[in-house]
Length: 440
Image (cartoon, rainbow, N blue to C red; front, side, top):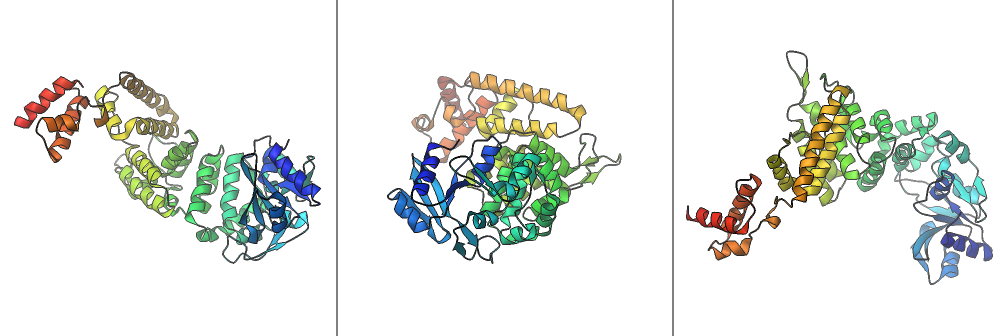
């Protein structure tokens, strides 16, 4: 049941006279018949004892908090001494910890009952707070007083929503109430940690329900979403308000962070450009550009990496553009977006459409199928859509006597002629066109 390396760590600690258990999420995942992402060990051994026992394979990664990283079988495992936490003055980390000889103290400091279980190397489960019953019920509940748990560490509020999304669990009423009441403390949490939890929430199987149920919590660090909540679109293409549409669009896409963040952002601008025509139909002209601006602000605030920001902004900006299902239009799109970017855009458009009124589903999906077929044909033909694929290059332009900016301008002209299918991507023909063009 336990990996060999984990069993070896527990055995070594026990043979040295200490208590030792696998603890937390790995035990939860085993009981859910899921493969644990990582394994944590808790023990009565003090950090210096763990260091001595596993030398030279022990790394002092967090001695003040009782944590030693033990390297076994090419993997790393955190081994932490039983402890009780002191006050949390920064709403995130304990000011101090007190090492304990009691497993009970260690389990009592944890956030949710389903993560407050321990297992020894013989498979015996220690469950002091009803974690197994909560797993059976599919319920998330704090250990002890929920308000106190969230006051100690506000990130637990986002962990709560993330687990609800990943596991498709409900939230215990007292825990839910405490999360809503304590949500303001999320302002103390590092942006990177909020981004990480939100990414995992977005990729969960119950993301639609969680987004629709808790915009008030998510809106504490993403206030840009709040104007979309309850915003009636007054349009026959839509059967949900803007936030409901957003939640369903996210859930209708593959669980890939870039795609799901794009869909979270894609309609943020609708609240700023909502108009109703004489017939009572709602419109959102220009919402793509506004959504792109809002997405850029959010990603800067949450410290997204450069590549993710570039990709997501491009997709948000393009999500509502109509790309005619023709070879020319799709070659131009390939030129602007690249193969990966265009495939992602089609995926975004599929999800956006899937979250609209059912009557409009099939026709739009058919058009997207057609676009994918044409893209596949172009790629199979190795059709030219980038300068890298052009049959001539900068050295060829220099041989014709062009210099500096003239070279780039001429290559762009030739690529445009190829994209528009005015010229084939053939070296001699392109050289002739360049020779003729430079004489003008």
